[in-house]
View 1 (tube, helix red, strand yellow):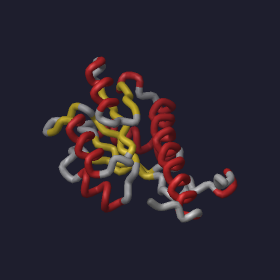
View 2 (cartoon, one colour; view 1 turned 180 degrees about the vertical axis):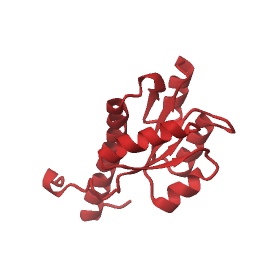
View 3 (spheres, one colour; view 1 turned 30 degrees about the horizontal axis):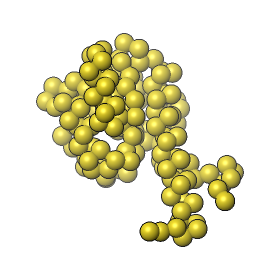
View 4 (tube, helix red, strand yellow; view 1 turned 45 degrees about the vertical axis):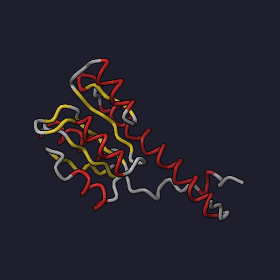
Length: 151
């Protein structure tokens, strides 16, 4: 028996994202978009403390720039996925190439947004899709625990 939609676990995960981007204006803009939809956005101009922030704040969704001044977003993606593969990472970049798209997906990104097309609707849909995936994972874990399914 699967839990009904009335008993969904989907609000167990706080709607909070970590947004890593070297453009303070884009960080501010995304924060405003997210706030309107009830999502808290914690912005970082560099990724030095990204893993620490994820653990400290229990963040499950990351919006990550590919081209950062002192770091490669694709390497950060790899580090995040190595630390916790369940964290959903949406890459956001102004570099529009097939290589970026393919490498991001191969390394486990939930999606890729090209900044020239990063409308509020596209950003919110991408973040909502990432949270929906986490919700489904949480429901599966809750179902397994409810019925004491262990290996």
